[in-house]
Each structure stands twice: as C-alpha cells, then as structure tokens.
Length: 78
Image 1 (cartoon, rainbow, N blue to C red):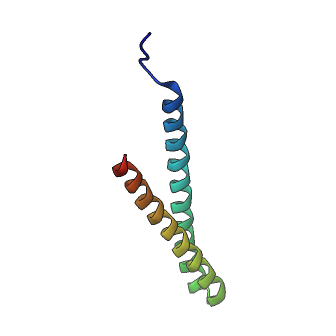
Image 2 (image 1 turned 135 degrees about the vertical axis):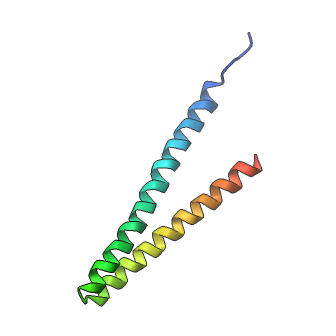
C-alpha cells in the first residue's frame, strides 16, 4: 500500500515551525521591549537600568538574527 502522507515527518515539521515561529517572535518582542525601556529609563536619568535594558535588547536582537541565519542554513542544506 502506498503512503500518501508521511504523518511522522509532517508532525515534526509542524511542531518545529510552531516552536520556531513563536520563539523568534517572543525573542524579537523582548528586543523591542529592551529598546523601549532603554529610552524610558534614559530619559528618567537612570543610566544603570537603561544600560541593562539596552544590553537585554541587544542580546535578544542577536539571538533573533542568529536564529534566522540558522533557519536559512537548515533550509538550504536539505
């Protein structure tokens, strides 16, 4: 009997896509939050907290860019 749809591979693909989509969106929203908090805290003259928010934003942005690069590498290698 021929297999029309390989459900195991399809389920893995769907789960990986959902996890990656939600994960990248969450990390990018943290980057936006860090940038907004940096602006707010910087205008309130709180340099240490502003620096921490900026650092968090930069790290989250780097993770976002890294995950996009990994995704492109995975897609082009298969």
